[in-house]
Image (cartoon, rainbow, N blue to C red; front, side, top):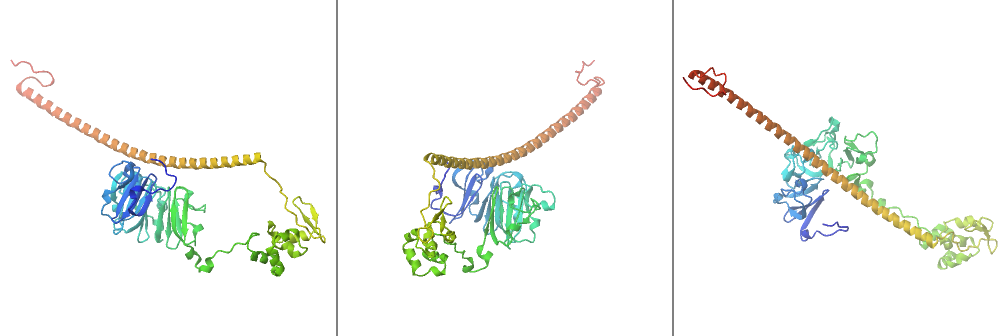
Length: 460
């Protein structure tokens, strides 16, 4: 598979009515209508594609376990996926289970969609997933989070630990929310009042107040009163969408931006306005029709302020030149006397400096180098992002390895206990057999039975 540098249609989905698309770090999913089907493709590690295995898929593949389900929404995280039922509002999750981010009460991976039982009874309207945590929004405006500690918003009630089941964010009780978004290590919500509350494990959640605690949901003062209707969180940045009409509360005239000032190359009417009300006579119109006359001077003050100023000189600069006792400063700073009546005579602008061909070549090489540096920087950032993703993958694999080690230790301890139990039973049976054999020897008069292992002698 090759990288695509420009958008390209997914040929396998041509002819389908795709109603929604979601992307994770290394996998993609979409929902089609008539009938409702869910397709996934990409990296299959930890069962994040929902096909019951960990095989990679290079083409959109139908998730058979979701057949018949009316899926209203999809959310993809770093290593797991979620689907939201349209009518029931129930949530199904699958994929990597490290830190309990699937919400099933354990850290095990799930290769097929499974209902989050802890969310039943709550009508969920939205789900958002981060690399190692998840969040859900209910119809009542409640926010629940679960997964890796440090970004769940529960720090206001003691030290936060990994949550393997959805838990309501108590700090947002009484704050009805309309939307939730999970970033790499932080979360943000939009409230009914248009405010944004955020929290997380680092300062990427956007608070500008030094006193804001990282993992405690706090309203962002910088967005107060901005009528925010949507927020999106990424790895190191966030973006908020404002309802401009709600924000201004005014009509079309109030929302029309101010008309920018027209410069020297503007319309003829703007030139007349900039020259003053007294210049709107026939003389001014003649000067507009014959701009060349302004370059030679007409001996009037209007000629100095008319269209001849369109050579790049700001409005009013000609008046300053006319006030220097009939002299005008040229590009070198020396005054030049006018030809008629001591008035300034406009001369062509002198070229102050020019670049030699060699210097131009150096400049072109510098621009090429700057472009190459920018491309290298972009590639480096892409590699850094890929390294961070791979690091997170390694963390998940390490977590899974730790879980496997724990299970192996448990099995080893159980096995050793069984061995010790079998040895104890064997010793008990051997002791009972020795006692019985000794009693039999005494009864038959074969000896005292002190040496059980010695073979019995011949009977006299």
